[in-house]
Length: 305
Image (cartoon, rainbow, N blue to C red):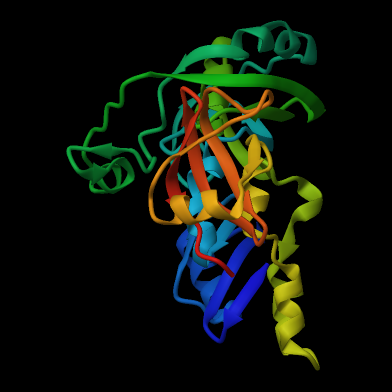
């Protein structure tokens, strides 16, 4: 974390969003707590879901895409026997079934939901249709038909079956995956119906479950004897880039990069090609760049803290 002056804050809040709060409300809460106008989140989390919502402050907003592109881990509970309009508890039931799959039935189909697969997003989603959010159209009573798209599911595991009606899963998946759609599709594949009744995100990109901080912890730190201690709960800007290769440049090269100019990388170990690379100088992270034919080109400059 860094803070140059009052109102200027740079870093990441690895926020443990509670159920009932929207992602926009979460960003607003972080602006209030840290007293900064510049903030954004790395991947929407539904109001009925809880867990990790990484929120970038200040210069960290420039690193948001590198977090959003990372894998995500979810733990979720599916209730069998009913489909809903929203594929979770929010919408009314549209389909029912008396059939209940056994744990053996569930285990037998999980391989079909791993790897590169096609998935049709829920009608109630943030995907835009002709410039409008799908969930806005669906709530207005319009029929929303979304096209299937390719997603990547690294793994999906059956964690527990507390009773015949419910099953708990954990999945690690790539960008654009809808867990609600996964529950819907598993239900159909198992000859029943299904919807999500509990969803918690445990990890996003470089951020792990142990990094999360709750609203209560943040508010308590801000209300304590030393309100400045709340800034100790921020992760640094470059925490978002820990999965990228990195390079440290010389003072002369740093000047060229800050002026938007490329620099030629020399040396036996210098990278030849990199789509994205974190660039450091003696003061810390200074840019995100790319390397083409041994030439380092700045893509996003990070203002010094």
